[in-house]
Image (cartoon, rainbow, N blue to C red; front, side, top):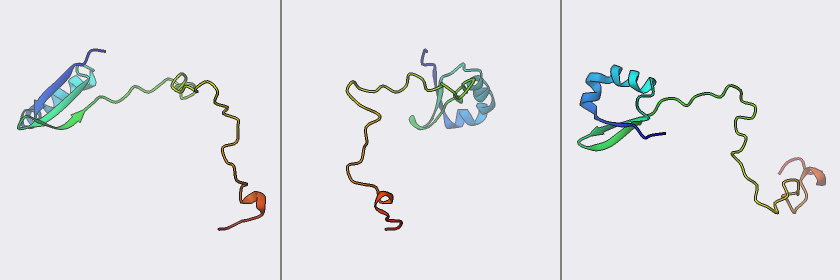
Length: 88
């Protein structure tokens, strides 16, 4: 995706905010950077698109290195419940 960033001063944004927000909603810009005296003070981005379903929407985002056993225990000491300790 091309980075279509609009950099705009706060005073100009104040005068044209509805038009800028409408363009951002239409995804004309990937982000809008508000500046004061040439320095960025805020950044606006359009909301992320929601997936059609939450099931499987993170598929492919996690990788497990070779040799890692996800079923292996992570604790070496016994759990309190196994020893009959209810409170510490």
